[in-house]
Each structure stands twice: as structure tokens, then as C-alpha cells.
Image (cartoon, rainbow over all chains, first blue to last red; front, side, top):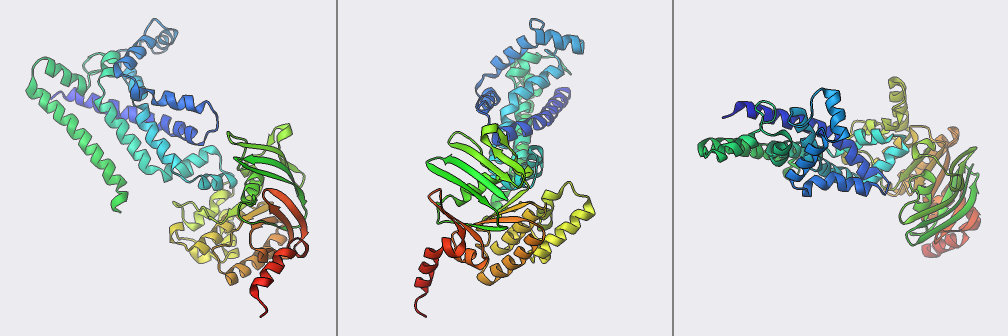
Length: 219
Length: 239
């Protein structure tokens, strides 16, 4: 068992999930409460990673963050190293790749809050920020839990983006999915079985936690 | 004084109203689909121009212009000093009654806020409900709490959209009597939309008769609702 890869995978998934919640809550609120016609384009962009092959996304990010673009050169100048093939680069890729898994449950949860409640809050002088944090988030807390768990699991299981953007650097970018791939390539099926079992157990435990915490249908 | 000159399209429904409400208690009377709720939502600033909506016109309350489409003026609902209570109380389900009433008072200092909440709950006779959740309230209790919540931030204009529908006659009359005294004492102008003519007669209100989105008549209840009064008396029979 590669405990270093296990710890790195959990660190990557936790960091990605935390960033995604910070980004996805205001984004989902904007998509639900906003009135601009451009929001359809924004929603499409936020959903794009759902249909885009992970390797394609990984390739675009690799090129964009590399030394051939102004963005890549700017980041390198700022950080002192390129984002590609680093843990930070992996976090950037994971956030983009898992974005729809955080945004879509939140959009569904926020949209289910009655518009008459939003109207009542606005009439009482609530700003958009207050409407989101005093009304939408508490009333859609199950969607928030779903978004967090799906983002975490999706990051734990990602492969294509990680491989394209991060490669296979032990302690920096080698996640459990990469370890599993390496083990299979080396015909080490016993170790591959253990790694796959850990990934499976993580998924089942997290999904069971979602359904336990949601629990509404049995309440 | 509330002044409005509105021309609004909501899907296939067209609303055109031009009038001035000087009285402190005005009833907008109309049957279902006459446009009462649409008018109140426009006054409150809850409906703006959209894909299937169009709005032109002006709304002014006292010296303040709230909406003026010709000059691009549109004040956000929370800045209009208006309160709207509809027949659906829309209480925040995750907050208890006390927190619901305090929601619009976030700018107040804590002790002042608590005092204001107590005062509002006393006004609507709901003091004993302070710690209850909205889902534990009856329809009538929820409507009274919604009223307390709406009045707490001291609005200049109170819009009521059939808000007493869940209260029985006696409870409704008692609340309206108490409310009218408080509103007058606090200089709050009230516009109430209803399809029940007795609301207009009981409160000696100025009445705006709305028919298919148009203002059909405006004046004292005895004049505007004469036809409606005869219809009600006729239904009661000779006894």
C-alpha cells in the first residue's frame, strides 16, 4: 500500500473540496438569482467538464499553464515554478474538473427554495449576500453536503487530468489512481486489488454518509 | 401619499393603472385575476422588466420616486420602506418566530431589536409564539407573525394582499381594529387588496375598483361598491 499516495490523494481531495465550496456557493447563487442573459453561457461553462474528456481538459490546462502562454509565464514568474507537474497545478485542474459536481447540486438546492421566501427577505432589506447565507445556504444544506461529498469523491477518483497535468511524481502528483494504473501496468494485481479496494471503500463510505445525513425520506 | 402611473405587461395580462392614494387606508377591490397581486408586486419593486414582462411608468411615495422607467429609476424592494404581506405568510422555515420578526432589524442594536420584536408580537397577539417554528403554527398564527415581521422595520407603506384569509371573522376584525389604530399612530399608509367587499365597508376605506387590469372606479366605498353591496344584501335575503 502506497501511504504517501493515499495521504496525497486525501490532501488533494480535501483542498479541492474546500476551494470548490467557496467558489460554487456564490456561483450557484448567481445562476439561480441572477437575471443576466449571459448566465446561460456561464452555466454552460460551469457544466463543460461533465462532457469534456478528462484528458482533453488536462491537455488544455497543461498548455495554458505551461511556458508557451502569457498566463503560464505569469504564474511561473509569480510562483517561481510552473504550475504543471506540481501539487498546486493538480489542485487547479481538480477544481476545474470537479466544478459541475459542486455547482449542480447547489443550483438544484437553491432553486428549490421558494421565490416567495427570497422576495420576503429582499423586502426586509436583505442584500444578495445575506439572502444567500441566511436563507439559501441553510435551507439547501443537504445540497451543500451532497456537493461537498461528490466533489471530494470525484477528485479522489480522477485520473486523466491528474496524469496529463501532474504526471507521476511521488509525493507531489502521484495519487491513488496513478498508483493503481502503475500497479496494473506492472502486472502487480495483488497490490492493485488493495488500492482498488481502498478507492471503493472511500466511495461507498462517503456515499453512505451522504444518504445518512440527508435521511429526509426516512425522517 | 402614493402616486402611480403604470403600464405593465405580464405574459398575456395587461395592467394599466393611474391614480393617487391619499387616504391612510386604501382598498384595491377586484375579483380573481383583476390584477391586484400584480399591482402590489409592482409597487413593492418585486417585478421588473424581463423576458415576458414589460413595465413602463412611475411610482412615487411621498417625496420619493421609487420607480420611473423613463429616467431609469428603480429602487430595490428593501429600500422602498414598503412591507408586503400576502395570503401565504412565507415565514423562513429554519428560523423561529422571534428570529423571523427580527430578520429585517439586523442594523439595530441587540436590546432595541429585542424590544421591537416584543412590541410587534404584542401588536399581533403572538407573544406566546415567540419560540415556535413556522411549521408548528396554524395558518392564522403564521399570518399574524408575517404581519409582525413586515411591520418591524417601520415601513412607510404597508401592502396587504388578502392577508387575513386564514383568520376567522372575529379574530380578523379584532386584529384589523388594533392594526388600524397602530398604523395611524405610526403614520403608516396602508393599501389592502381584497375580493371581499366587507373589508372595504368595515374599514370605511377609499376604494380602487380594479377590473381586468384597469382602474374601473375610485372613491368612497359606498359609491364604488354600491353594486357589490346590493349583490351581497340580495344574497342574504329578506331576513
